[in-house]
Structures are given as structure tokens and as C-alpha cells.
Length: 426
Image 1 (tube, one colour):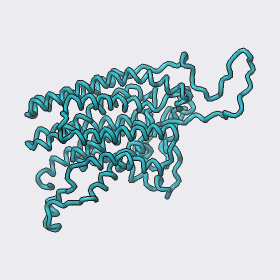
Image 2 (image 1 turned 90 degrees about the horizontal axis):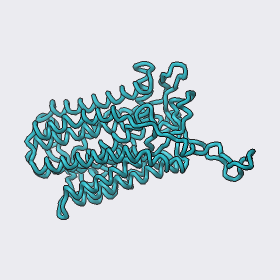
Image 3 (image 1 turned 60 degrees about the vertical axis):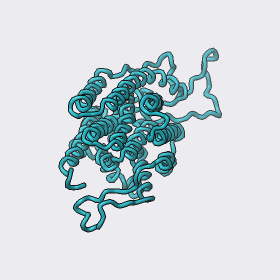
């Protein structure tokens, strides 16, 4: 959910009176003139610093810390290079796309700045479509560079791209038509069907060692139940990012943090394993995550506070599906769910409102004080308001940073748990 108030649609049946016979009538909610519109420049200094912060530890692990096969290093390096090209194209295409979206009256108002001049600015929305298109192009080109016609991963790779593309389309439809919540929950189910049909991996789970004496099995085949679990994982990932939103940069920021955590996890598993198939599974995840990370950073350059574009449900669905497919096909869905800990907590805390037990307003946002510029938490049940009630009032930017730090700490906790429990739990 983007932080926006959609403009009302003017009555098309009656034209407003034109006091100036020589001029064109201007509808009250018309999009700003393209000649007058000026998009704020991207915050490239901040974004490039973050990108460098990600590249340094990743390449250290790839080239120094772990003994990774030379051909796999080569393909991963190609992936990073193409992803950086995707970052450049994303930054370059967003200003172009904003003009097309404004022509179609696709803009909104920032509710968290209502009552200030910034709250009256018409902000282009649904810019996640640019990120998704560039991502798909990079992923397809990368497929040509890393996979052959007889590769075992070709079918699953194409199925993953089909799911991401389908979910992007459904997200864009949602942004245009404003689909009800009950329909939103069903959309990921249909988008996940190509992945379910192409999935050729195992459907069994490893029983935790402390439970083996009680269960009597070390491996349990779940069969169809495992595929139901995968569908539920897709539905959760796509909607959880959409629910944990409401601040400039929060949707994209949490995706960037989770994506980097997944990349580090993939590289650690490749470096620690000798199983070829296991390495290929995590390499596949890297081929998806790096384009997602860089194109998201390109969007974050415009979406970070103060946001000059809104990402729309297109982005949240696209990002959630991308993370879900790598968790499923890379066979680390348990670890992925640990990375999603803030989203899980937010969902559980939001359940009374989401399922209608408690009144749920359209936008579960904090109150903005125009005098101080601070946000105050409301009684709505989500992490955004909970953080304000627990830690006090603050600016929108500070609140977003706190939530992203919490996301990063959750990912670090996941790595810590894996290290502590390794060899004992499984």
C-alpha cells in the first residue's frame, strides 16, 4: 500500500463552465501540465553509498573468503554487472515513465504530509512497473548468459519469471482498478500456478533432530501438503510487503534489506557446500536477487523521503513474488521466513483488523502534526503505529529508518540462529 490519497474522478457527464471562451477548460483534478512538472532529482549519493556497502562484503565473500569454482564466480560476476546496468536504466527510465503516468492521471497525494505544501503536491504513482520491467529484461538477458538449452534449471527459471511477470501484471491491475482485499489474497494463488506446475524438487522435510525419537522418522514426505505450503508462502510474501507499508521508502527499503540478506545466505551456502545441485539452487537465487536488489535501489533513489514517486501495489507484489520464488526453488523457505520476521509480526498483529474483528480504515496510518512535523501513533494494529506508541513521536524519515534497522537486526538474528543451531537442530 502506497502512502497516497487517490484523486477523485471528476464527473464526465457535465463539462464545467468555461469563463474564458478563448481558453481550454481545466477540470479540477487534471494532472499537472507536463511542461510545468519537474521530478525531483534522485538521491544518488545515498543510494550509491548503500550499493557500495553491499558490493564490498559480497565480493569479499565471493573472491576471498570462500573457495568458489571459477566458472560460478564468472557467472555471478556477469550477474552483478548486468544488474548494475539495470540500476542505471531504472534511474533513467523513471523520469520518462512519470510523464506517461501523469498523462493518465495516475498520481496521488502524500497523506503523511497533509496540511503542508508537500501534501498538496501531485506525486506520480505505480512506478514499480519500471522496476519490474527492467528486472525482467535483465533476468532474461542473464538467462542467455548463464543457462544452456539443455540446462536442468531452464524450466524452473522460466516458470519463476512467468510467476513474477504475472504478479506484476496483477499488481498493475490492482493499482488501476483498486481491487478489494479479498481479491488481493486470491491473486497470488493464480500467479503461483506456473511455479507449482514446473516445480521438480523434493516435497519432503527434514525432521529436527530433537524430535526424531518422538516422530520415528528423520525425513517426512509431505507430498501435496508441501505444495499447499508453497502456495501459502507465495500468498504471504506478496501480501506481507504490501501490508507493512505507509512510509516513504518503507516498501522498497525492506525489500532491499531482505534481498541483501538472501544474497549473503546464498553465498555462504555455496561456499560451505560440496553438493553441485545445492550450489546451483543458491546460484539461481543469486541470479534473481541481484537484479531485484539493484532495480529496487534505482527506485529507492526516487522513493526515499521525501518521496517524489509512489511505488504502488505493482512493486510490492512484484518484490514479494520474486522473494517467494527464490525461497521455494532455492530450497531455503524456512530461512526466508526468518528474514520476514517483521512482516510476520506485522501480519499477526494486524489480523484482528484484516479479518474484520476490529474496524479497519482504508489507510492505517499515524497522525501527522503540521506544527511539529512529527507522526503520532494511532490505535491501528500495525508495526508503524506500534513503533510510535512504544518509542514516541518522530518524523516519518526517522520512523522508516527505525523499521529498516529492525528489519536488518531480524536478518542478523536469523544468521545467528543458523550458526548456533547448526548440527544440533538439523
